[in-house]
Length: 281
Ligand SMILES: [Zn+2]
Image: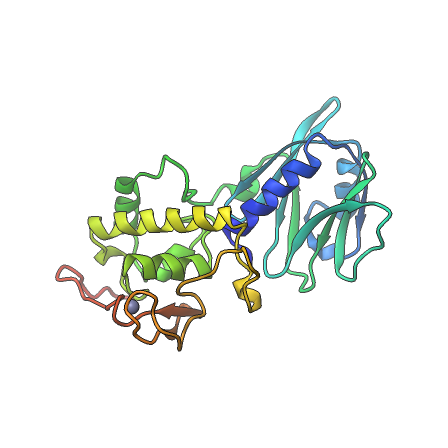
């Protein structure tokens, strides 16, 4: 499942390929891919608009569309489990799982392929309609170590689940959560309010370093099995049964908040903080 680095790689690819392109056609081959508005309105609004910005917010691809004599609008794409975007010549035959095809004036298509059909497009005039509840961008300078720590201390619940909570941090998913917890030596089941200021700072630094390294490598495809050469290769995620790269202890897998979680029992001990109290559920 694509996370921040994979989405960022897609955004950079699209920016390079479709910035300033005009959309001249919009085909929808799977209606439910369009979350809003209705498919016909979606098509009518897109045609004639120009892609004036391609950015990312959390795991959303955000395309700003400029229209003549009409307000700007935003086309957001979420890849979910298996979505991918490609820009290819319009004359190329359609692939099996192409769900949406945007025809561009330059003779190319933006094609959204999505075998599992969970991916979504949202076309809105107000960006916050979709992104309003998202939390901090992990790479945003506004998220200082102090802000991160205070924000974390105010939360209840399990550290791993909190990292995955998009209203807390936007863009982190299962792979990079496991990676930064392992690097920071924090047990995934620690409670958020037991994390010390020092631990929180280290976690944020490791998270950022991991995301930046992964963006440089154009993300990972670890979720799909073997990692293709050149992509980010996880040190913790999906390495259960293999020796920890720091201490050689056998890595383990457990389920935290219904998500498969990979950790080193030696590097990531579950300590109970003295000030941690049992909270009623
Ligand atoms: Zn270890």
